[in-house]
Image (cartoon, rainbow, N blue to C red; front, side, top):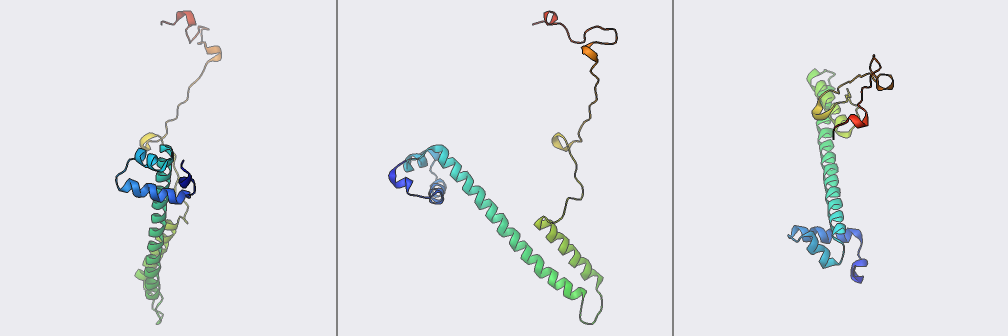
Length: 151
């Protein structure tokens, strides 16, 4: 690493590496330019992209919760109006909004959990019996002796 490069923080590296990648530079060219290992370039770019993705998901989640808050406020005003008249459709809407918010924020437990095998198939249960000493009921070996195995 060059002396100038060692004075930079990881975040600064990540910004520079990502900017270079966006401009079309290869990881090897970036590593050579900044005097770092190619693995370091790949690691920082990958970690930065993952962080950006997580930050964007959190931002989107906050936006969706804000929308749900506004919708719920409207539905609750309609459900519990000042005249004391109950609006069942508005109540159902308010409950649906609250349920959606709970799912979005991960507040609800899964209603059902199931273990599954490959491709979502049910797990196969296999029951087998290993006879005593690997011999059948007549005392004969179930596994051939090493000298009987064809190579």
